[in-house]
Length: 269
Image 1 (cartoon, one colour):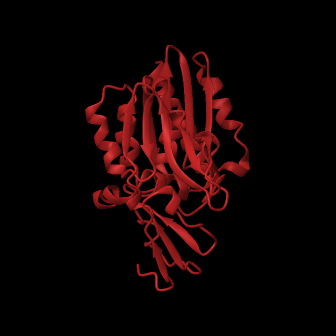
Image 2: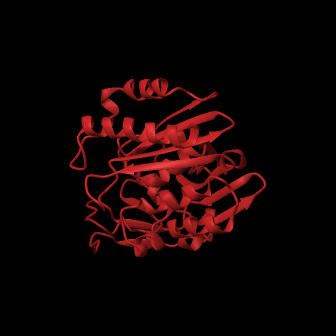
């Protein structure tokens, strides 16, 4: 998609080079969504490719994912690590609605900041206790737990001019067993429900995305019963269930309950 209203493209190399990102400009990472449809009122792009951020930085503390990390690179990492949660990388990356060409260009940060309900990188980073590192326009930075990063469809806690720099996944979360389930109205359609569960010595956590307008996350210090898990989903407010052409709220709620029961059975038996 051509963006005929773009008048300027900035290509910063360092943080000091970053221009102010205002209402008529946008951060450019992979650009797979930005160039997929008209962007009226957008007159400038700030290309982050030249910032040189490392895509993936494993360490004893866990994993730091650069905001410009291609989704395909995150999936490939799963084969090179022994983290029990690594299969979730593969499942969530493949839940992206798009071809392998899209996955090679689309970025983790772009998927998170776009914050569509079906964004699989939200499901992954919330489920693994991710913490976002956000650069502020005044040169400082702040940390935001991923569980609270998204407030609704295409809405986040980012203030004007703020930039997602990276997401940290702690080692403790990567050491948990994990499983996921996905449901769509069609075989290759957008996720209408995408759930991720993790377990470690009885501690159980569930993250619900796609069926809700923002991620819904809960953790139990001891293994919950099926009834407790079902009650948690039943208590999700009606206003949080997503409603669009990819699924009605009642159907999404039903599928969420069904998939949560499958995850409970798989991880807790």
